[in-house]
Image 1 (cartoon, rainbow, N blue to C red):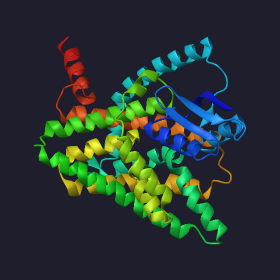
Image 2 (cartoon, one colour):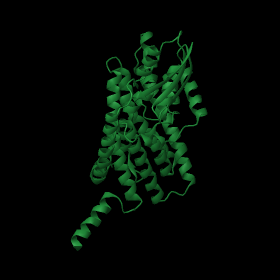
Image 3 (cartoon, helix red, strand yellow):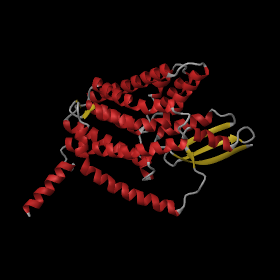
Image 4 (tube, helix red, strand yellow):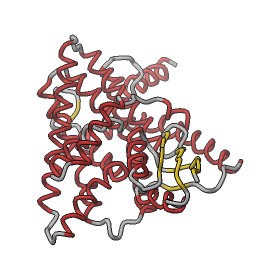
Length: 347
């Protein structure tokens, strides 16, 4: 008998999570149709209940480090979310005042006088905690195959890392080329950094489950491109190609932020180097998860992802402040503090 079920899922933090859940459930015998929606945090599943049980569907979702929410929302939870939203707004304002000092600690060496490679690597390092949810299953897949054949997974990890980094660098060059078509002025360069900071702040808030309405702010990847990448990655036996085609999943918020900044560089080579630094940063957490998968629980992975959301809020605020400085808007921390000091002295 065919059954339709609407499942509430916690832990979806970007459009790429939809693809991960849909692909995992579609591969199950008895599942007829599946559609995940990141914006609402729900997944509609049609399945034949005499072939697959609902508990097995729940388990498959949780194996992908997401959480099935069986309890309906109550007023207390709404009050908590409103309180957290207010605290988040206050926190972002406070971060704006302290971000300038933090920025200078990460600003050497420079990338085209905009951002440091170290800064981008750190953003990638934090994003890697989110990559555990989206791409962790890819790493586990080839790691299990290596174990079944009695091989060490170190070479596979290396090939996966090379493939993913090359893919990111390739798209970085593409976006850098797109930016080169436009005349990149210091103002436009600053706007690209400002937009990237906004994207990171939105992604961080979405990771924490604050301001659900912000989930609607997204750049959706063309479905044809996502299907092509998923088919290529699923049919690939080499970890190199698994990593390479995982770079085609462009639904990740921080990755979209980096592409915006690569376009702001207006140089294909700089864009490639920019995204390569970001890609390398994502690898330690992701590959470390592949090695530690035996003892790292789904609940712990969810907590790690939430921690990354807090850190991304900080990094996004730092980028936002930097963008405001470069556009000479007069609304960055240094300009505001200078204006306030002058007003106090005039009095």
